[in-house]
Length: 390
Image (cartoon, rainbow, N blue to C red; front, side, top):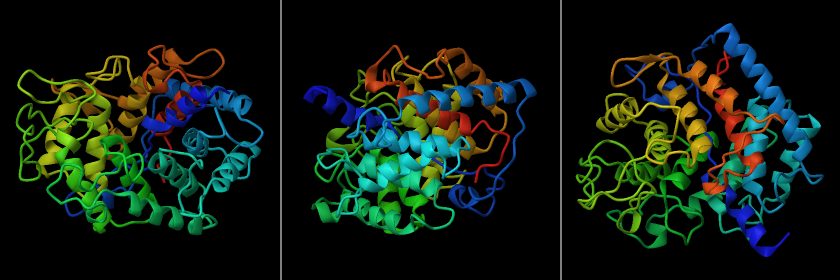
């Protein structure tokens, strides 16, 4: 493998993320994150159930073929991809002791560094890789076999968070966020992943690390409020999210004529679920504004604001966030109700390749890698099951 190809594979996990949560029953006296332990079993139509089973089976068969002998997928340096695939298999019902999953888990354990991080030795994406590994190991930790490994990784992640330990003030746009490592500026994709990994490691929403992350997430929202007083906060003011508030702000969807940053779909869904996991409830103005944005931009045809770019990252983040909101029929801004689970199953069915994989012809953010994209889709489909989320 060439040096440039290896570097490409190391960065493919840039947009990998995954959230594991329950559906919400009551928000009257509990935060979303507390209520996430309560689940609602949602029954799909018979046709959708049948599609789901077949799609999942074909995807797993594809991943059986593409796994390397060392337990990795795509590249032995792409720890994040291997973690994402392993987690997707577990959430698709594959047993922990199956050869496919056990090899994937062993590969992750082998890559735990003395620091506690779980990543390739030369990685510049230590946060992503470690967070993904925690999420996969947590799925397999019913008997506590990985608790020690997870706790070591948790401590490593705490050390990467941008806070006073990095010598920045709480007023800085980077404060509370997670970046690729301790030196590269934080962003919403890294930070939403950090929040979920901490949660899966058992960290409370009241923990200082979670509350610092909430500060960062709030500042990434296009919403002028006491929680975001940065210069661009009122330029768009639509409740959506941008890629990062650090270093003056940035959106992958581009800028507005008045100096603002455009909101876009995948990061707005990521931002909304991050607010929820950090302890905000349905009545918080930030949650209300973000929910209103996704009602106004509901679609499965594209990643709103980005077209076909990052489409499968969008599908998987869409599904996780919708499951957190707990609305079986999600009403868009026009009042039209969407059985989003069935709609997502039907959409992914049309896009699945004959060999069981998925791939994005718009190969930005490495969605030309079928292992990565197939993992995204299996994760998305895991939220479309009739079975309760655990």
